Amino acid sequence: MNARDRFLLHCSLIDGVGPATLAPLIDFLHTHDDALVEQFYAWGTRDFCALGISQARAEFLVHGLADMRMLEAEEHVLQKSGAVWVSRLSGQYSQLLAHIHQPPIGLYVYGCADVLNIQNTVACIGSRKADRYGFACVDKIIRECTGTDVCIVSGGARGIDTSAHQHALRTGLKTIAVLGSGLCRPYPKENNSLFDQIIDAGGAVISSFGLEQEARPDNFPARNRIIAGMSRVTLVFQAAAKSGALITARYALDEGRDVCAVPGQIDNPLSEGCHELIAQGAQCVHSGSHILNLLGVNAHRKISNMSIFEPVEKECVSQTNMSHSEQIAYPADSDEAYVYAACKTPQFFDQLMALGRWSCADTLRAKLYDLSFDGVIEQDFMGRWSRVTGR
Image (cartoon, one colour):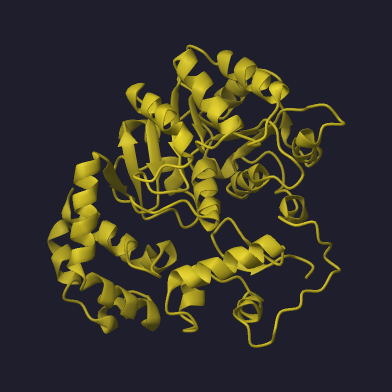
């Protein structure tokens, strides 16, 4: 690991410091060599502020960079685990992912890091409670991609995700599992054998979270952004009306990527999300050849020109059944009321932390997740938190 990558690994471990804070620093590193990196450890708050980093964030950086034990502990686990750290400045970092707004600072990778830059990547996502029809569709479409250089990207979860990875392995396609936990704490545990098979077959299991971080509900929006961000096409197999798969599809739409959906029975709740996407303009897919043709058509197009329709309305992916006319009621002095007030305009996580109400980033993350679950705030494709439209 070179000095720049090691420095970014250190930055990624600092509580309250994320891609938005580090964006000007990464731009600075792009134009300077490794020799300058050691100087950052001697920088003060004013030096980081000169790059456009806020006073509060700069203080977090200075304090975090002074803690070398944190970095050394992560490096020890990294070496022991056999995983590698691929920073945004690395040539192995997914170039598709690098083009999204506020991409992760880096990725932890088990397996072959080279697969991160396979160009014909297809995200296969859907319900954790998929039925026989959903699994049959996964089998049919992936089997019809046999013999190509298509790489299947999914989240390693139960249901459609697991089926997509398994069928990719059976047909000889590369596959990437993007986890919502650290690589040393893979989730779900029952898929450990599957993850080993993915690695043995030349694929990769990746995460943006620290190696020993447990899976948490608020990790999954970031994981979903990675799935959408590193895929040229996002294909939804089965999804209920309030499915998390629709959030991933929205991320893909917001980034101008192609989104497709497999139709289902009109009386099956697991088809409602797919039918909603199709009604909004997603391509209706019933065969692998459709996906292959789509990839071929887009082979020489720029990412910014790959959108086929307007983003899905936010109401389609709300995580609640509450109508927009319903009112929220949080105690005036509560953290929930404070967060809701702050999100009147879109806010990055770093900006919310800079307000100074929380000393621990995990506390704020928990509040954001709670409000998101209540359906009153949401995270956009740039990672900013804001009130749900209409509230």
